[in-house]
Image 1 (tube, rainbow, N blue to C red):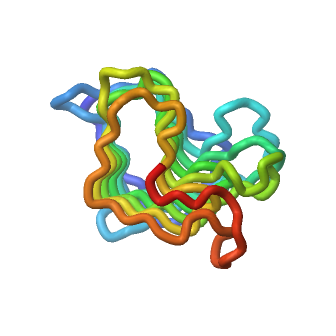
Image 2: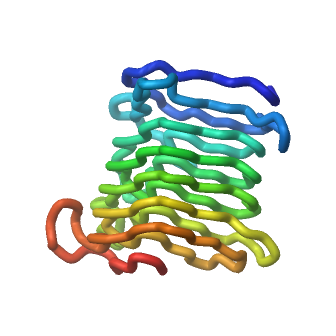
Image 3: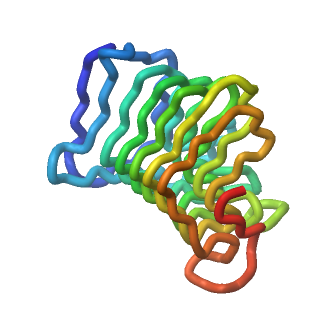
Length: 206
């Protein structure tokens, strides 16, 4: 509930899905899910599972004023031609994602969608996401995607780095809202990761 802090200890956590649904903090009383100081919790897909329902993400946030910090979210690889996200914020507002390391997922690493406003993505590394099983092979795995958000709101990406994503670094596809992108780096996107074999569009900031 509002004001709670959950510390995750170092080690590997194998999840089917963590769904933060209708769990909200408050502006002055966030829900914090943080890495324990000096330790690295790694959140991975639990083996092979047939997650047939969208969104196929290791973490989904549909809530407000939640602060994730210091987590590694990885290896939610494709099992079909659908997209497998690392983290998705869907109808979630005023959340903070800080010092996250999101990589090797079968779609966009971090997606912000629908009526999600006021979110801050801060000092995150998002890399090596690719979708080899898609009908548009390798063409839909971005570092961050902000999409289908109506005009009149702002989401902020600050101090983040994007590389070796098979499509784009940041993609603002069908996004009508404002996106503030500040002090970010984007390189070596649009290739099959760790190669220079062409894959998706390869825009750094799209």
